[in-house]
Amino acid sequence: MSRAADAASRGRAYQPRVTLPRISTLTVNLSPGASVPILRTAADQTSSVTFADSTGAPWKLGAPPFNSNNKGFQVSYIPGSAMMAVQALRRYDTGNVTVYLEGLAVPVVVNLTSGEPDNSSSTQIMDSRLDLRLPQRGPDAKPMAQPESKIVLYNTVLQAFLDGMPPLEAKRLRTNGNLASTTVWQLGDELYIRSRSEIRDEFEQTLSSLDGTHLWKLPLTPYVNFSVMGRTEPLTIHLE
Image (tube, rainbow, N blue to C red; front, side):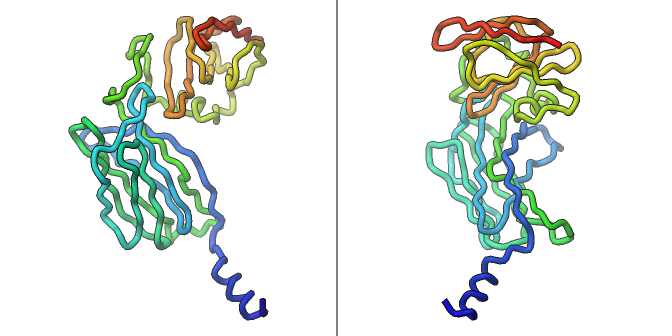
């Protein structure tokens, strides 16, 4: 390759900002006057948006999403799925997409942005995946063994633990037990347990994500029982 061709290739590959991909979760407020969720996209990157109900079950799209800015964004979806994909076609653009979910009386509107021109930072955060949770049961809602009143949707602390990014003052505790993908933190006089298994014991609050991960909040206790493939698995927690 000649130097001129190499320079041209480098020029096309040059990115004015470093893109930092993130996986984010938001609970959509459907009430009048509520703010609209924002999807942060980046040029030459694809962002996925998933929809789930309050039980963590997928909520399928019932119609093609409507894109308000076809020149700035490309929006696609797979019929019969709970996911759509958005790709920014140019930098520093805005728009929105209106999504119609099966059985939901009102549409879900998602604002789109592909960067802020007045942001002088050398980095740009984008949502490689944005999980949107609707505050009610959907057509494919999971059966709940616990009262739905214990599902806490608008709680930033529980959401932080569920995302695996707990508050700085939270202490991760050592555990013993045959439970995969399970993490326990202590914050004050409360335990926060993140697991893909179902808890059998009493708890105070819970929150679930679309991928089947649960967050359980309960008082301090050295032993907790979970259900794994129909059998009870104990978890021993080393309290500090």
